[in-house]
Every structure is written in C-alpha cells, then in structure tokens.
Length: 355
Ligand code: PEP
Ligand code: MN
Image 1: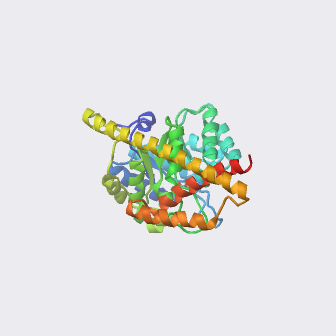
Image 2 (image 1 turned 90 degrees about the horizontal axis):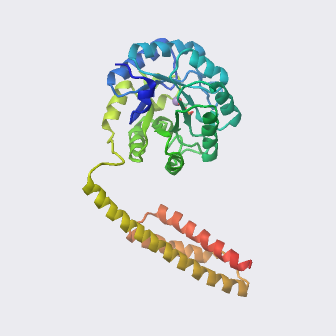
C-alpha cells in the first residue's frame, strides 16, 4: 500500500536515499527501482539543480529531470524530494508533484535566498527539510527555520550535513556533533536527519558516521546512492549502490532513546543521581578554585604582575596531561577542560585587577 507523505513523515528512522544528481531518465528510474527493492527506503532523493562550489562541474539536469522523479514515484510508490534554491525552482518542483523539498547548505547561509524560497512556499502544504549552513552558525540555521515557518510551513525538518573548514580533515565536512545536538535541544519538535554522505565525502566511513548519528538519537538518515557510483556526475566518491545502501541500513544498530522497562529506568535513575552529585561537587570545587585564583589576582595586582604567565600555564597543562593519562582522560579533553577553566580564572582575575 502506498503511504502518504504524512505517514512517511512520522516514520522513525526515516531513510532518504537516491543519487546526488539526477543524470538521465534511466539512471533515476533504475536507482529508484533498486532502492525500493531493498525495502529500506522511505523517500527518494535526487538533485535537479546542483549548487556547485566551483563552476565547470555538472550543475544539474534542471527542470527536465522533474518528470523522471514523477515517474520514479509512480513506479515505486515512494515519495520524492529535491533541493530548491529559488522561487522558480519551488514552483517547478511543485508543478511536478515533488512531495518534500529540501534547502541546501549553500542556500541556508543566504537569508535573501531562504526568504525567496519561503515566499514561494506561502500557502503551500509541503514538508521542507533544511540543511545546516556550510559554516558552523546555529543562528543562520535557526533563521532559515524561522523564515520557512513564518511562510506557514508546518512540517519542517533539519538535516545535519556537517560544516566546511579550510584544509583537509578526516571528513569532507566536519560533523561538529555538538552543534547538531544543540540544534536538536533548541528545537525538540523538529525532525533531525543526518547526512553521512556529505559529512564523510567517501564511502569507507559512511557506516560509522551513520551509526554515530543514530546513537545520538537522530530521526533518520539521508544517504546518496547511485547505480554506478564511480561514474556518478557529482559526488562520486561518497555514493554507494542501492544494494550496499540496503545492506548498510541493515548493519546499523538501532538503539532507542527510551525503553519501557521499570527496572532499567530505576537503575538508570540511580546512576543519574550519582552523576548529579558528582557534577555538584565538581562545581563546588571549581568555585573554590576561582576563589583561590582571585586571591592570586589580588597578589598580582599589588605587585603589578601580568595575569597570564605562560610558564605557569605550560606547567599546569603538563601536570594535567600526565595525571589525565593515569585517570583515563584523553589529552583532547584535558586541553579543552583546562582551557575553559583557565579562561574563567583569567576572567575572575581580570575583575580583581580592574576593580
Ligand atoms: C546534496 O545533497 O547533494 C547537496 C548538494 O548537499 P549540501 O547542500 O549538503 O552540500
Ligand atoms: Mn551530493
């Protein structure tokens, strides 16, 4: 039985898949048929208009590809989604019965473009997915959500596709998971889908990224799939065949955020209480540390000494790394933690110095 978009929207996990770009009618239809056959996909995707960072690469087949998506929907019974970046694209997509629209990362960064898309959506009842902007800015992402919501769109979802940075990293787009977690915390009512394809930029770490997203209680995944990945006209390195997609979805361990067992909840509650106690103690101790830092501040002020003393700071860090290693605390964590504590100490001392 064909599911309505409303039903699909409530599905957890929600799996979206399809090629990065629609290339030919055969490619779209074969990908769609093979994806549907896996039984693991809820929505078909394909880029019709491709915002490429540099000119000269394939920029999308354009409106001509929309009837192919319509046909893919007819054959598989699956709803379809495409990216829209202008009012005209919204209009065209809706003319060809696209079920779900998505706003790409390069559009979310630009309030003019988002507003243009939002204005075209006024009075239309279509779900919209909004990718994070390419830069790590939650306000821009939030702004895009607000613009689309103000246009009257009720079903809004978020797509976490990672953030671009200068230089090569392990990822094509750094996931910065904490930003997705914070966005989810701020918008608990919005669906949050993870895009392992654009985070990874390559096949070999797709599953790891997808698993991490599911472990962070995300609501679904959007993963690119192509019948001949290496020959894809865009994003060839990160695409996988429909069969591999099906297999990968099967390999993910689907953990639930909550289960109903009372025993489990009682045990969890006890451990959480312990965590609360420890957190309280940590804060008490930090507050004591700041009082001592303030005393040192007084001393520095009276003797006209600078707040920051690089040698002392290096000594603190070296000590902490050694201790941390024995206590099973990573160097990365120790660095972040001491940076934060140190900054807070400096702020306390600054107040004293300038009082
Ligand atoms: C895409 O989904 O193919 C795409 C262009 O993604 P993003 O906007 O995340 O770069
Ligand atoms: Mn892509």
